[in-house]
Image (cartoon, helix red, strand yellow):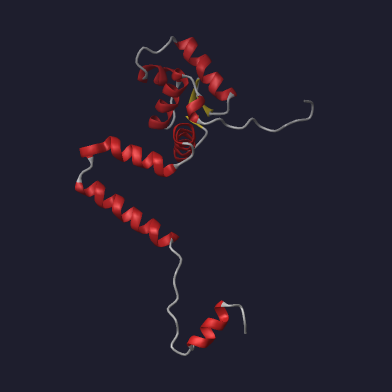
Amino acid sequence: MAGNTDKPVKRPHVHLSRRERQIMDVLYSQGEASVADVQAAIPDAPGYSAMRALLQKLLEKDHVEFREDGPRYLYRPKLQKEKALRNAVSHLVNTFFGGSRADALVNLLGDAGGELDEETIHKLEEELTRLKSRRLPETKPETKTESKSESTKDRRGRN
């Protein structure tokens, strides 16, 4: 469409090909890297030209950006790692657990089985306590000056 200057919407990390995900993993772990750096970090990596083409594809998909460093380009993820992680987790929860975070957590904890040490269990308990305290509505204790008849009238909607 002529005149449409909107940038393409970034797709979650999970929609990338296997090679593209490998490249993104390298870039997230190294911060930024040249084509040769990425190639060296990936087992069974394709040739230099193919790697350059994959990085170009990631540029077109708006997942990476680059800066010039002398004769070479250094590539880095455009999306912060935390945001990419949230996107990937959200996609996983929606795809496999019908959007239920609780089901996803129960599944993850069930898979962990005996792998959870006391420190991890303590951290989980603290986080659950914190979440509960944010979600539970505060209850006001009944004041001594309020008479039973006034309280009854208020509940019935009369003044």
